[in-house]
Length: 411
Image (cartoon, rainbow, N blue to C red; front, side, top):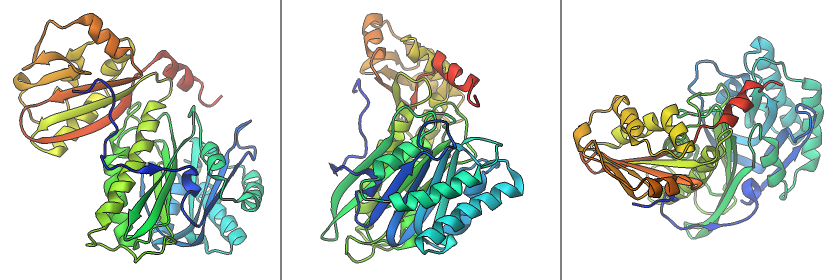
């Protein structure tokens, strides 16, 4: 058992600079247009050629206008650009909100010489406030002129809301005899829960891949990564994860059934896993990233169900913040998960310290437990001893600062 959070998804990749513009044929811009008071608040990511595209979206029944519009556009299977504003969610604004989201796509398309249906639109921020479309329109025009291969970092900053740091990664690997890159950026800090949350993830790759294959691997990757994090149990109105693959690496396109599709899928899992853990680490007010590993489960679904239950337990999260090895809260959260298991067979570890064996507490070294819980990365392992399946989910501790941030979010 390891006492630190591991980086799962084993293949070794060469991380490279550049974020979302690291792959060939992508440019980006990020700037301040006045939606927020001071920080950058408009991002634009563009492929120089039409790119195969896929996406996943929030499962919340209340869905923001940009989610509805991008759902329509992604049906075509191809995109040229993603435009995103922060500071305003454009959610719960009625027909005007949908009109404004469509207008963002139209303005971006006109400036790029593309079709509106080739533009993904995203927004994040306060719900129920109309978009300042005069600022958005002027900002899109300005962003197009600022597009560059060096603009990835500005774009990553521009999609942030309560995030304390930008979240971006890029890797390089071999695929079908060619060097391929995947670059990505994400935002998310609060209103984070499995089935997507107030999080946005935008991924670019110069791999060549058919839309149906891209949607297949993207959906599976989101399930393994973003859908296995939780900050506060709230699922947002605005979440989306969008990927564009422009094929400029020059290899034969991947399709469903191609054995090398798994090579690409593993690389995508790596990228999304890095960003998912960064989101959990940056939970509003958080001081610790918590990795919850459920092993010895009869099925992976059982392991995920138990891990998610533990990840959203405020009692577990506050205990870890307080450096209290209260393992009973962990077992309790597993018990109300709805998964079927025998409590009298379960072992619980905090780091590498066994604190509960066969559902019964042990006399463990409290000082050693406190030392483990003082770390910024804390691992919890629950062994059901009922099979060979396992799953890992991530969350963060719950602190006083979470209340401070969310008690005055609109102001």
